[in-house]
Image (cartoon, rainbow, N blue to C red; front, side, top):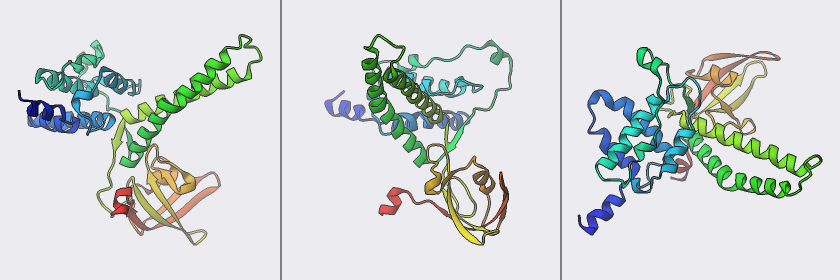
Length: 279
């Protein structure tokens, strides 16, 4: 192999490697495999060179899956096979597929019916925001709080050590948030609004409050984006859920503690991304 060929191979990005791999699969296997490898690429970063992948990356990806009724093998097995193939093709120096740990369950082998994988609907912006928050928590916040806890622990008298108790509680909260974000990212189902005809995640909706005769505006979003003060409501909230798949002119009733609120959908518009706004 020439130096130029070797340099070119080193620059192969994860997204490119996945696309090439998917093209070699039987048509019947492509959809399911593509879905799970796309999830893997979103987590790692599609533009990351495959030779920079590490066992730590693979381990962190697995840690993010919710420990619930989800059949992890349905998601992890395509990743394991793909990573093993990279080693077979000498795209990577080590077999990262060996880092993917599949569950061994005899009951699932004897039962043909498999549970649906639990997903967390969100927009691309929400997914990106969660990744930024996770990086900040892991690289900045957690080390700082851990340092404060270590410093407070130097005082051997824990009975009235308020700084120690506060740091310990804060570290628990930070780690809890990290675990939550990992779970959401690994279960993310990225939604893209393809039409302006009905309400979906990422759509800005202008409503007419029929009882107050005034217009209000909301953007329906997924996990990682909710901010009520900025008018971003969850698609799982009572109002957000009631608005999903509605069209302009539809009447929407929402039950609240103070009674039933009635709205009319006036307009809907796809939210403009930062890139679109700049162009």
